[in-house]
Image (cartoon, rainbow, N blue to C red; front, side):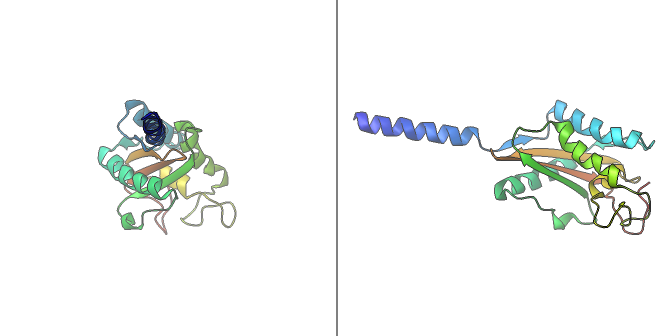
Length: 172
C-alpha cells in the first residue's frame, strides 16, 4: 500500500512539474500588447512614420504559428502567409528576455541598414535587416503578436498588415 502511494505521489509530482513547464501563451494581455505596439512605434517615430495599431486578428494568426513553433521547438517562417501578412520571428531561452529585448533584437538591425530599394538595403552582403525593415515599412499599418513558450524556449511571432519587404520598393 505504502509503495503504491509513493509511486502515485512521485508520478503526480512529475506530471505537475511537466504541466507547469508546458505551454505559455500571451497575446491578449494588455501589458504585452502595449509593450509590442510601443516598441514597434519607437522605431517608426524615429523616422516620422505613422504609428502601427494593434490587430487582434493578426495576433490570433501569430498565436497559431507560435504554438506550432513551440511544439516543434524550431524557428521557421510560415510560407502560407507570403504576400498576405508580414512576419517577424524571435526565439530564445524561456523567461530570459523582456518584451523590449525581443523587439529590440529586430530593431537593432537598423545598424546594418542602408536606405535603398529592397532587398539591397544592407550595409554589407548578407546583412540581416529584414526584421527592421518590416517594422518600419511605410505601407504597414497594423501589428499583432503572440508569445508562446514550451518550458525551454519562448517564441515571439509578430504579424503585419500590409506586409513589407516588397522587392523593388523602398521601405519608406
